[in-house]
Image (cartoon, rainbow, N blue to C red; front, side, top):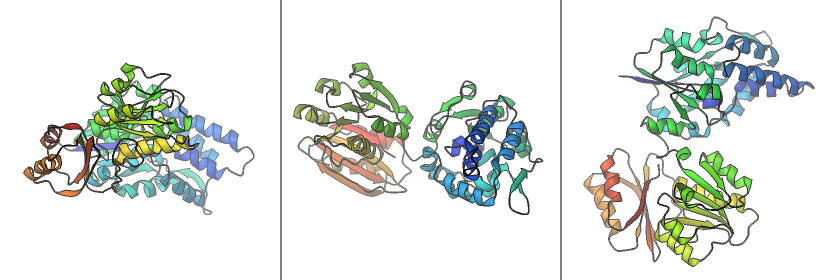
Length: 430
């Protein structure tokens, strides 16, 4: 049976509400602009939360805009930089599902089409409103015959399309939930990467903090193997807000504590800690999910660094008391989690592999004993898997292997790699 993916635009595909942004462009020289911005934002939120009909909200916003085609050009340029992070990195999904992805929005084609078509989305699969312009290219209205300009417009449109198959809806607003309420779609996913509306999330089949999460639970092709919102990042001690903000932007599930409590460390994949609040070697040995530690200062001692290494846990520290450590440490942690880079680590061998497109990256950490690389490659050979690139570095304790391979292998390959003797940690990176 066919599957279709109905995706909203404003605050879903993009981080912002486009009409609100258009107002900031078109009204920037008005002395009363802040007052008008507030009115437009209030009309947007009232409709998205189901407190005002979409028709009344749209009409009110268009009257306040005072925009023209030149303003729209500036808006498109702005929106291209505001595509939601987890959408922008999952181009492979859109490329592979061009016939099944539909953008359905109460926004306008004039600014939606030039943004989403850069992600392989077909023009004929973009459903949105259209502006009406006067002879001087000023926006004076919109096509009121378009069902998407009306209350319940997404429901009306889907009835007209009469798609045959399972339909999944992804969006942040009440009009998206109405698709589920109508019975026309199989599941509604409330998208909360940019904004979370309680009136919508409490009615959703599933809350998805990122597009990665949606792809993961539906077993669809994706840029990263495991959604970051499912990885807990423990912040312990006095860590600067700038560093925390970087991890939040990456989508990690943040937990902040004054000290390192065992129950929280045992659940964490990432630990950021101040110099005076570091884990003990024993705590690291009992934290099976932990992959990386960022210390804002000098690591507590050689024993801690060695035990972490033996446990497959990389440490980045900043012993020089760098005033930019709030930026330096999270960037190193993120580079390791995203690409497997170990440069500037205090306990892992140095490796900076280039990112390879159209391949899967596997990381294998093992005790530094002879023959492990041969066993890894034997698994690939047995399953006729092409190796695109392979990197091995060692120190006295561990071997660290990154292998980039062609896609198209079964889960048994991953299980066999994990089962190799002397394996410490293994993960599919992307």
